[in-house]
Amino acid sequence: MRIFVDTANIDEIRDAAKLGVVSGVTTNPSLMAKEQGKDFQSTIEEIADIVRGPVSAEVVALTAEGMIKEARAIAAWSPYVVVKIPITKAGLQATSVLSREGVKTNLTLCFSPNQALLSALAGATYVSPFVGRLDDAGHDGMQVVAESVAILKSYDFGTQVIAASIRHPLHCVAAAKAGAHIATVPYKVLMQMIEHPLTDVGIQRFVADWEKTGARIP
Ligand code: E4P
Figure: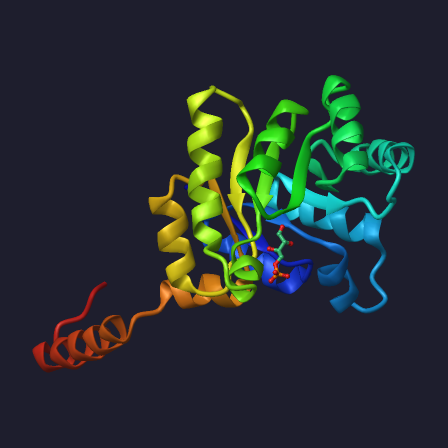
């Protein structure tokens, strides 16, 4: 499973990219709104320049024609751009046109395996089940990821499943076990994945014991 970082914050993306474990970024209008005063196009171009991997940028039009127009414009910003499109009738129509043109798409706001199947049939590059929001509504979000992965793999669709709306490190473990191709994780969760109190205690002990030896590494 690959890891994308789910943020539009340049500082977080720069810091995460240094780890060498992040291969892409997802943004959405709410994440963009947190970056007060930042221009959409230049932010996406800057992110693409940092990660040099897939960067999802979302359309805001609600009609197929509007989505197609916005998607063509967004796709021209960088070869790394993936256009995020909500799964609606208009979104599926737009995706089927855009996929034939070679525009990469990430079908977003996926809450059921049927929506994932339709996304794949429309030619989506990625589909993103929203785990946390499903859990919040009393459903099993990870089951939607697992069922979507199973369906798409059974029929050899090229569409990749991104486990999205990740809230904590255990979601990442479950996404990997469910066979998700990618988990897109907030910066905070990425940092939590690194940390373990026993690692910290272990380092303290090693440092203390090493100092007792009096030895030095040249
Ligand atoms: C993914 O592509 C979405 O941007 C994101 O994961 C949504 O997460 P949220 O439910 O925490 O807003």
